[in-house]
Image 1 (cartoon, helix red, strand yellow):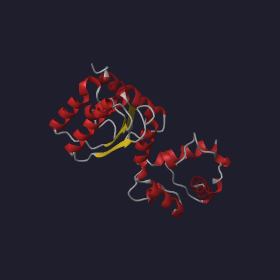
Image 2 (cartoon, rainbow, N blue to C red):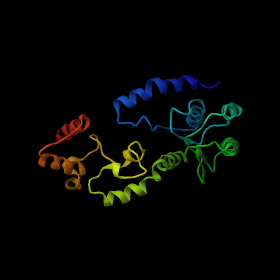
Image 3 (spheres, one colour):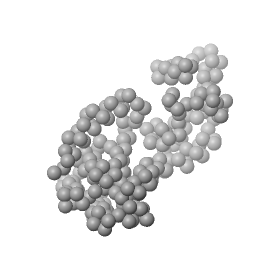
Image 4 (cartoon, rainbow, N blue to C red):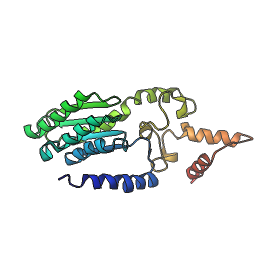
Length: 231
């Protein structure tokens, strides 16, 4: 009846996540799961089944009505368990969706809002004028943007003031904050000498300082990063 959601979640945990975090630049301490419709239903199921697996969840127009509000049984069992739900959750519905389908989303919103889970950062939005498919892009954009929105103004102000570009200078925004992949470059997307800000690059400036120094103390990561950039 569940569509093998448990099997799929186990595959994500034991196969997909390890592969992504091995092969790509990813932050294991801050994972976000997003899905729409049946994927949104699975997103909520995952949150109640293994809330510690992801730190944020984006459920766009989740199909709560499937199986006669099947999900709400998981929600009720979780609430009665007394477990913590210290995650960030974004749920959306389309204002022009069918009343029956939207009703399931509204019932879920009413239920979870009444729980007042300590540590839960919850946002609910109805995207007016959109139906089931049309609202999904905006729902994803809003949900993911919300994850970085609180830090972006601080990062922008800091970027105008910093002399070295060391992210450790910015208080309240740790190295694992989800904002950094949005505002920093990697080997894959760095433009190198074609970048219009190349002469102002903090990495380039640090390399120049190192070349001018008599003694350089460096860790293995920085040494390898420098070798990659020289390629």
